[in-house]
Amino acid sequence: MAVLGAGLAGLAAATQLEADGMDVTVFEARERVGGRLWSETIEAGRKEPCVIERGAEFVLSGYTSMRRLLDVTGLDLVDTGMSYYVRALADTPDITTDDVVGAGREAAAIAKTFTSPPSAEEVLQRLDLEPRLVDALRARIEISTAVAASDVSAETLENIASFEPRPSWRVSGGNQELPKALAARLTGTIRFGEFVQAVEATDEGYIVRASTGSSRYDSVVVALPLALIRGASAVTMPLPEWKVTVLNRVLQGDAAKLHIPLREVPETSAVMSTKDRFWTWTAMDATGSVTPVLNSFMGSPAALDNTRAAVSHDAWAAQARLIRPDLAFGDLDSAVSTIWRNDPLARGSYAAYSPATNREDIERLEQPVGNIYFAGEYADPDFTGLMEGAIRSGERAANRIRDAVLASTP
Image (cartoon, rainbow, N blue to C red; front, side, top):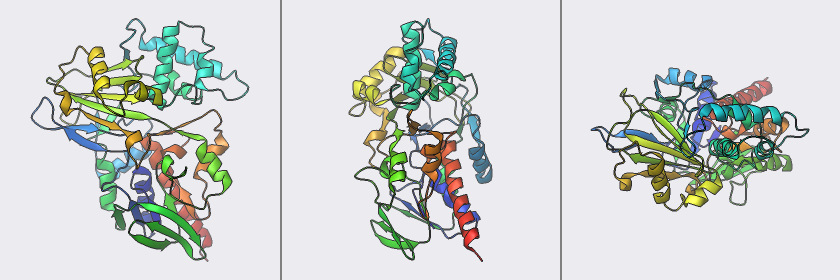
């Protein structure tokens, strides 16, 4: 079996395939595992380096599959001491989180009155509320989904409306410790630095053509970011029109992260800028204290374009200073920014669904084409765009292969 991609979806699939007795080879274009799960360190206001998450960060309630893999690999979760769901509004301090949640609940109720699936923006336009409050809700949607409210399905409002001050966790030592641990447990080969160019169907299986040569496999799991399996420069595969259509209906968001060192250890916090579509937070790590780093996440193409974040993080850092006068900022030259649109192996962040995407479309995202199977955060209906969704999708792909093998065995 070939698995294309050593992110969480690919490694979850490879782990399950090996558990089922399959011979697995993983192709990974990077020189590391994890994909958009990427932990590094930054020097800040304490002796030891601070772990930062340049990609996926928060482990949330309901991550049962991820917790199971953490148990298997012996990794621990650390409570961040803050809640991913609760963010103070820097631009409009008189508008509370409860106000935004209430607006979200009202919007979710309005969305149910449409005869066909609306966009989030269509619902927002029907809210009879103060414009500043509506824009705060719009900002929350656009930051969280990393796409414009006019493009994303109003179903996202169900999540906005249910935001409560629930805890948030991270993996001790960095979230990338999980893909590292999964990779270390594999007995099959992980071929790093392998750029897969094509998957070709033959009478004897599938040829995977990569940068260092070609090999034949019985089945292939495609666990690559959405942008790499569609479009003119995508990996070439024998995809029928129906598959191309459903893949093209999924949105790939545009998001970026910025980590700024602090001179002093702060309290835990979460503050959002409605105007500039980003939020900031300070959180605890495995040491049991708050990390002296200001973390920031910006979502939606317009936000990145308006601040020129894809070119330089200077304007973003300046805005972060304005909304966080409570913090002692360190050397901005040591700040670390991650712009996923600029990464040629991602070309964007995580997925979201447009109003045109229905449940049947979502099911067909994972539907195999022959013995080519598909896995990724974009394909999970319940945890779309999240680490948990990637894991669940990868394991489902492996289970489908197992069932197909069992069905073909006399």
